[in-house]
Image (cartoon, rainbow, N blue to C red; front, side, top):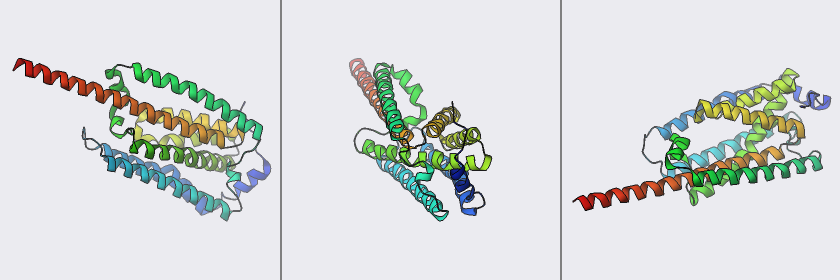
Length: 268
């Protein structure tokens, strides 16, 4: 059951931000400006139709994501410090060490099992099914090598920073504003989903559901650490699965072209 009681000291500390202009400007940036800019940039990358997104474009895209999220995290910590709060007050703490470590270990075991299932499905899937699954996202899936190394950095950054911003900041601020843990959890999940609107409506709804689970996890455990590790791991799994799917499709398409060339030469 989701704990609904709020620590009075923590509640009072966060309520101090409610009358602060910088806290609400920062929240507006997180909820509106960042998703809008992300959507525009993503559409620009996909505007080329079937044109392949170059290595340079992908790496530039990844670098911008990493820099933006660390900048926002630094701004958040500065605002907290200005109001006498710390990263620990936003959930960046161990909390109950036994609970935090136990939950983290359990999540890693579940993630390992799910990873094996998903990667096996990718390995056995028919090319047509892979094409449908990837859709237009195929252009931005990282390839193995330098792109994957950069993508790992993106995953680690997203795991750490997005949990601080969308759970550590949003949940605590909205809980102080509404006095309701449930309202804060739901609203933070919606903001998290809107931040991924560039992936399409269905993906946004899935992301809202994931955000809801991560917010509940944070409230239940009282620490961002399990969610940060899970978040980074899931993102990495998606990248690796996508890379394997694209690799299989490329091999199948190359084999098909070779077969077509051979048939053409035989006919000639």
